[in-house]
Length: 301
Image 1 (tube, rainbow, N blue to C red):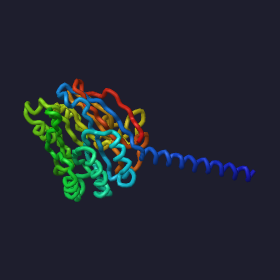
Image 2 (cartoon, rainbow, N blue to C red):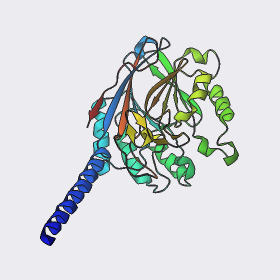
Image 3 (tube, rainbow, N blue to C red):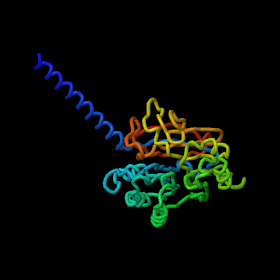
Image 4 (cartoon, one colour):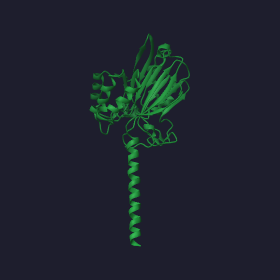
């Protein structure tokens, strides 16, 4: 009888270890494969030369490395052949800041397409941001810290706006949405400016009511990490949104404003994702309304 019990215990222990090993392998695979989500976004404010213009969004890298000198990440981007690359914050992580790792990616990206960047909350928490900023400028990245630039294409233009993360504000103003709204309205400019298609880069998706009230055409965000664990396309938790957050990924439309949220590439405080692999976002612009999702596909790289 004792021998039977010992054999059963061995089998149970083996099964438990096998299950743990399998879950560990699944988590490792899910946290390191790169997917690409594709969205078609249209507006009647887009001029004909911007038909088919492609934007590759990178968000929340958090110093994560995808192969030596980021070659896996850079190859995934190269295969998409974007017209421009935008980085929507948290390129580095405040808990393990590694500017060299971030710049490995950036130096490869600028060789493929023009790169535009807005800082996220993690950049706002590190003393080394000044150094990172200098490195980005030296590499040829366009920094959009509460400013805008014109993107020209065959005589037509769109306006690309960037909001610096509220974490850069004095502590007493970090939750002040009226302050953010005032800043955005100033960035958007006059009625003449608003005749152009205006694309905003901003780290925070929970500010969607502000973006919509201002009437910006399209916003690209990150920050929520897809809700970390995803079940039935619903994230479990996101900063500033809490449990079962509304804005964690995909396209959201409110009024005349469309917001595209990247689930991001890396992790920060919590090291694992579930059913939520690292994501690049590719947006293709079209010259017709509405600014909404017209299809999405994910490709494993």
